[in-house]
Structure formats: C-alpha cells, structure tokens
Length: 238
Image (cartoon, rainbow, N blue to C red; front, side, top):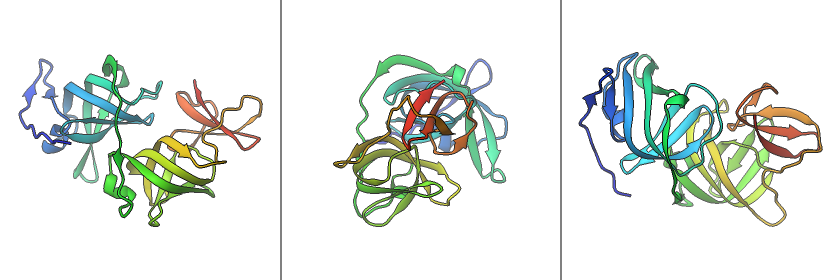
C-alpha cells in the first residue's frame, strides 16, 4: 500500500477544519471542542457500533460514533462526515467524535483485501489494520480469548464457539478490560466440525452482548449478539 501524506487543511464555511485524508487527523494539533469535517474518499473497514474504522490511501484510523445504528457493511465508500474533538489523557490524545447522522456514503461497496498476518508477529503489530490470521484458537471463560500459534493473545470482540479455526479476519483496535488488545471479528473460517456464529430462533435468550463481546441490557438497540439457552448465539438487528 502506498501512503500519501497530505497536510494542507482549510476552514469550511461553518468554521470547521476540513480534512481530505485520514492521515490528517493525527497530523494536526487539536483543542477541546474543535469541529472538523471530512470530505474525501475512504472505506469503512469495520463498524463496531460505537467505533468506526476507516481507511484510505494514507492510512487507517478509528473514530467514535455518538449513537448506535444499523451496521454499515465493510467496503462501503464514505465521502463525508462531521465531528467534534474531545481530549483525553490530560490532553495528550484526541477522540474524534462524529455524528452517525452526518455520515454520507456513495452507495458503492468495494471488496477489501486483508493483510496476511506474519505468523511470527502478534495482534498489536497489526493495530488498526484489517488482517487475516491463520490457525487461531478460541477459548471461553468469563470472556472470549483468541490465541495465535506463536502464543500471542487477544480479547475477541464478537462471539465464536470454542475451538481452533483455520483463520479469522479481524481489525485490532480499542481497549479491553482484560488488558489484552481487542480483536474485532469480521469473519471466521472454521476447521472441520467447528461452528461459527449460530442462528437459532427456537431457544430462549440468556444474555445479550454488543459486537465487542461486552454484556449489555436485553433491550439494547442496534446490532447485538444474543446468547441462547441451548448454548448457541445469533446476531440480531433491532
């Protein structure tokens, strides 16, 4: 991938800083309450409900969405959105908060090709990157843990049955309460006899989770994952 560095910015009619590439977000110095508007072409790599991973030729980044809504398909082309800066960590980092209602899509979808992860590297080596990891194991205790063949571990955002999978496609980004990197699941290729997310409308709902694998209220809106009384799970859009 060729990385293009663009630093020129301008102020829009509403006094917002207008950005035309993903890399510009991290290149600028922000103050609390600064408003911005992205106008360009970027791809949605992953929509985790409260976090949106986007990329263009200059790089990949995460922005925070103010409200939950229907999940946006990976590969959707984004042309514009507006947001406001919230500083955290004593002003050393910025959260790029955007309004879901301001997202403008072109209506086109392109296939995104994940990076083939090096078997000697760990999840954090592919931070904010859509990557394909081979021969991974999933175990479950109070939370889901995913482990690579080299022993590197992550906390799995999204539900899978325990077992060993031929591959998973995921984007790593965000903090988990376990101290491990959060591995946001996009796709899983099961080995023989191992099931992925299971659809079952007959059993009763025991617990409800968001796409990061965090337990939420049973009436939560948006795309959630329900754990059923027979041990299976299903994705539900409300």
